[in-house]
Image (cartoon, rainbow, N blue to C red; front, top):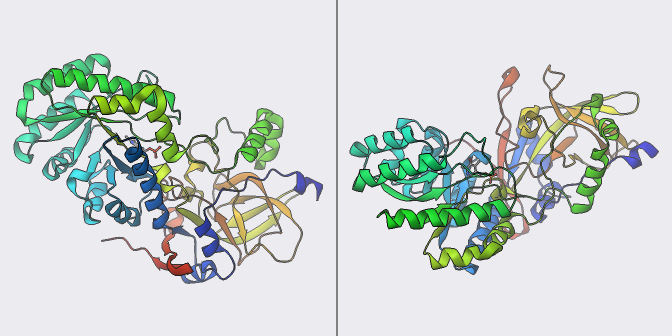
Length: 448
Ligand SMILES: *Cc1c(COP(=O)(O)O)cnc(C)c1O
């Protein structure tokens, strides 16, 4: 018992709708019965709230601009319909993502295309539909110019290689930017350069504000050269809170001691880095903090510069969770091993040499048996197919018929790495709405 009580708990911060689905009288058990395997639960209304939060900050600061949803963070179509309702654009990086955005009602001018060396097909499609293209290299700029003849005038941004991120493979160096501007001037009306963009690793306010200020000056210089450049895109990377600060600090204290860190994980597994599961500020408040830094909002207003942003994870905060039926439980000497129906590919953090730390929740919570501590494995033949290497504290031993619910997985966890390994079907996707106090649900099907 002592060992279990001392077990580190990392309960997720969860929005209210989750209880209506997972709590007493909620439909979670029916969903599991209908699906008969692992599944993801998605709540689009929460996405709309998150999007409205970002828009509200732009309005409060009287900064003109647009929010684009970084689509790669989740494959579902249900978010795109919320984008149409909240005047949110979409950031895509492939032809299928582009086509799906259009099919869900997003219009071409509401799409920004990012990513490395884009295919001719994608560039052509973007130009045909009047989407904004974040150009990443000089040869790509030349291809864009060449395609303009058949596709119409492309709208472009030039993506900048940040000095704080010098080893990134994305973006133009300072010298390349000078050459790109010369080529844009030479291209004349064949091309419409609307400004500059960046996307930074990490979740810091200061480097984003500093680089944004620099890009405003680049826009001014480009306008002085006769180009229309009046927009900057600051990309994504808006932080999300998965855990409260006390739990996260406690975990970090324990993690400083590598011996106790090894104790926390199955097989003495060691990790060198974790996502910052708690930070401050997050989401739209992080946007406000960026706008507050060194008078950035005022600078945008004075110079008539539009602010574009591309949050992915932050728009999906609190928007979904993932459910895995328990298939077995094996007690070992001092902790157990749970095996679930489903694979660790449905928890993508496990494939980045790290661990998704928020506690999975055993459903139903009550039942016979003493509290146990256990790691969680997937139903493949791989020893390293682990949904949680960490020894999780459970109120009782999980057993077949129970469910394990991984919280707040909509941003990148659920489908980034999913495969049909072992010829297993991909997890089902269930969309819930909670109008009139009642949670209603439907299975989401692909468009085609
Ligand atoms: C992935 C990506 C985003 C979204 O990043 P988040 O961390 O999910 O906010 C935005 N812009 C670009 C160019 C990206 O590659």
